[in-house]
Image (cartoon, rainbow, N blue to C red; front, side, top):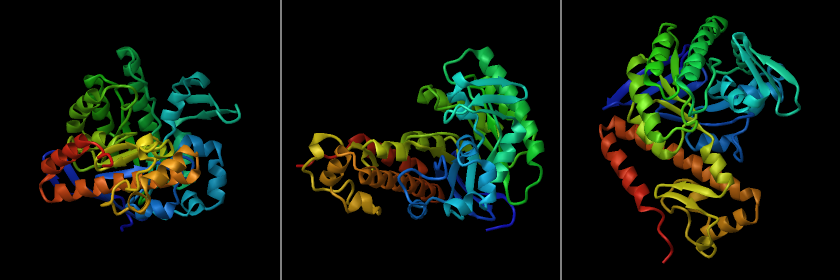
Length: 376
């Protein structure tokens, strides 16, 4: 640990990078997957369990936490870390994506965005400065700029307008953030599916000399090949000595292919959301535990897994729990999924360190392609 925010690039294998983010509350090993704790909870998981899966950092959501329980209340209660009993790094997103997804309730202009709460209909205004203030009240270690995220497909003119606005907001967020020792503010590259706009956004953010850079506005409706093309265009523009974060992504395949492009950090609700709906991620691909073929299958999800949820519970029991809508089913599958994601990241880091990332990549793809082995 350190009293300052530092990113150290320790090794590279092709474009894939092995690194380490050091900050006062702990070290983040990269490439890293950040479980999403939207309202201060990683759904269906104890945070001690989340830590035991290998997570170095979790994500909180500014929009949701400002509505409930409220940023000022969280501050009075000693900050988000103390409230949720997680004394390790927390990244908070800015609320921009939620504002986009609730576009029917919003009014956006140069000053910021005015929106109605989806909880009680109350009216709120979030400026770039207020977004940073909220994240500071929460006690976030890594804070994200307020941006405008445009769902794809969209007209190039609309994408360009949102990108330019996000750049201006990034500068205001940088001023509002000031100098906070041991903490960081990341800018967010926008530009939709337009390579020239992505490059312009990245170049503009680079001039702000931020401590890290995120790629936003992807995984919002575009095909995977478009996402990878935007990364291919964007990442060479960003400083190699700063961490790179791909927001809201994604599947294990998305992660593997994005690491190959040079991404260092990821977050996604998929592991826990899928778990709550009966879908398990394993080294042999996805397993829908709701399927009838699991009803009398006493095998575990994966006998070689280090996770008790994957190793010690039968598929028959998991099938019963999920089909009965028992909460324990979602808890066990979420535990399995987060463990799988963290094991994947651990394997990626080890492979980069050993100079065999291409081999690891090929083996993972081969295992996923085999699919789940049915009971004989």
